[in-house]
Every structure is written in C-alpha cells, then in structure tokens.
Image (cartoon, rainbow, N blue to C red):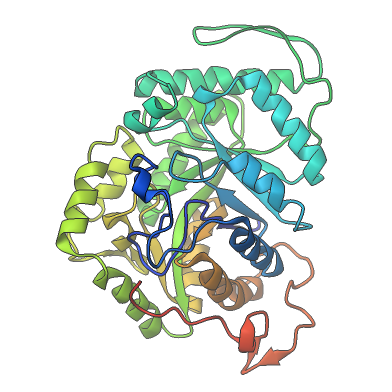
Length: 401
C-alpha cells in the first residue's frame, strides 16, 4: 500500500496568515468584501495555475478544490487548469443537494474526456445549515446524508451505461442515462464523522476522508468505517486531510507556526470559535474539542498542531516539524491504513515546495511512494536541494500578512 500525496487549490484566496486570506471572507454577503483585501493573493487563474503546475512538478498526484459560496466554482476552475497541466488529477468538491445526480454523472463523464481521465470527486454533504440555505437547501443534517446516499447510488447506476430507474425519498429518476460513461470511473472521496455519515461511506465511496485527528482517534474511525463496509460486502480505502509546516529543522518549523499564531488576536479567535461552534458537523465539533479555543498545549500529539483550527473551519490541524519528523508522522498514519494524504499550507505555493522538496524525498527513501520517475530528476541541485524553486530552495515564508 503506497502513500498517495495530494495538495490543495486555494480558490477562495491565499496568503501568509491564517486570517483575512480569503478574497471573499464573508461569502460575498457584503459587497465591499468582494474584492481582495490587503495581503491576500486573489484566486485568479494565473496564480492557481502556478500552484497546479508546482504540484505536478513536485510529484503530487492530485489537488483538492473546495466548494462553497466563499470560493470559485470547483468544476469550472479545475477544468480550465486541466489545459495547463498534463498529469495532475483534480479532486473536485461538490454538494449533492444542489445538483441533479444524473447531471453530475454526465458532467463527470464529460470532464473525464476533456481531462483524459484526471477527475476525482469529493462529496461534501454539508454541516453548516446557513451555508446550505444559501444554495436553497433546507434539509437537516441527517436527511442531507440520507439524500447523499440516494445521490451516489443514482450516479453509480447512471454510469452503468443503460437506462437506470430509481425511486427514493429524495430522488425519482426514470431512465437516467449517461450515454458515454466516464472512463475511468472517478474515485469518490467522502468524509463525515456522524452516525448518519458512516453507512453512506460504507455503501458508496472509494476513499473515506478524515480530518487530522491524533493517530489513536484516526485508528478508531478507520475501524468503524471498515466494519460498516465489511457488512456491506465492500472495501473502503482511507485518507486524511492535514496542513503542513515542514522545514529543514524542527526549530524553524515551530517558529513558522508561532508566527502564524502571533497574527491571531483574542477577538479574532473568539469570533471564529463562536461561529464554528454553531456548526452541525460532528467532524467540526471534534476539531474544536482538540484545542477548546485555547492557545495552550496546541501540540495535541507529536508534531500535530491544532493552531489552524483556532480560526479555520474544517481541517484544523497541521503536521509541524523537520522534514524527517513530518515523514515520521505520515508513516505513522500510513501504518494505521491511511493511503491518501490531502495536504495544504500557507501560502500554498511556497509550502508545496517545502513539502515536495523536503518531505517527499524522505518518504521515497523509506519506500512509501509508488515506484516511478523522480519528478525532480535531472534538475540541477543548488545548496544540496533540487532547484525547482528560484535559487534552488523553497521560498521562505515571512511573518505577518
């Protein structure tokens, strides 16, 4: 079982800080916030192309693109980026409740032909009712998962290449058809920590994603989903969503984490925690419980830092340490059964280089990566490091905004 490395596309904006890095900070509710704020890199296609090309060059298999009113549309953005990349896959996040399952199946098939088979799908059921209502979705938490179950059954049925009928609580389809099914079928990624989410994963998905909890808690999740899948006669693979701060020394990595923390004033943290505390997502509540809104003891497990979750919803933990230490932690999660590592860092362009040039060679030396050509082979070295970034080393992230 090899490690699959994926990166992240910041389609809401990027920056050198955990706060105010989004071009659409409040989802565009206030018109004066629909332009990039100071210190933020706007998510224009040129900047996103830089990240995509860097990820491809550094050997990442795919990039995750988020979904929501605070970012650009994932389908349109990534299909544009398929035209400036060659091998990179795109893990496209979408919400089942706001699109027809038959249309989604058709879109995936078209995408596979345009991209030459580079689509992966990340199903986001949604844990924030306020955000869901912006899309016209008024179902409660558990019913959203029940609808996702039906949605995925229809998508897989329509991909069969013959007319498909379905009669459920949320969808009624008569003769649903994708005339030219996708080839290959996109792998389906999915996450959810609630009792309503587990059976959906067991019945429908290829890869179950968890946010970056301590190893023992991740092991328990894996055992839970694996047991449910066995009852369905299926096998599910596993992935984890984490941020990374990897440096040549552990001291430098923790100093960078400290600079990110220095940007967070108490009022900003309190406001973020109040907003995140209203989420219906069980996974989000588990993220909040890791730090309790406090800056004390944010290293909740060796090299696992919960500081990101003080202000960021969703994935709230980062692997922090030297390249070897970060590789140690990846190896530890891998030993539990994690295959897919969906990673990110601030800013995403520079952190891709830090990880790709620092941690990836460590993983390769340990035999954890699939055999294949070194993405940086043949690139002249400078100062002992591949010259894939200007000057032969990754760009140093300065403090502040």
